[in-house]
Length: 78
Image (cartoon, rainbow, N blue to C red; front, side, top):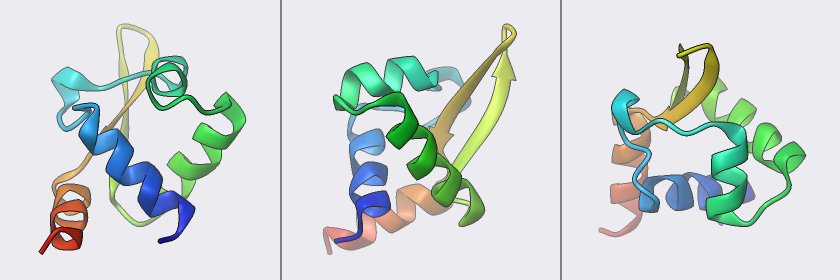
């Protein structure tokens, strides 16, 4: 499984699946136990594929899995 897809599954599993549950890079780094630079690299790939969405919430960049990302994760379990 490619690193970015494994990362997507982890992001889904920690519950970042809506704008209300979006996480900052620092929060993601803590939850997934990954260096912030690697988090950013994975997020960039996933954003390009429309699996993750970035938004500004209270002045901070926050990220969450999109419906397409959720479908991608769920398709891996079927």
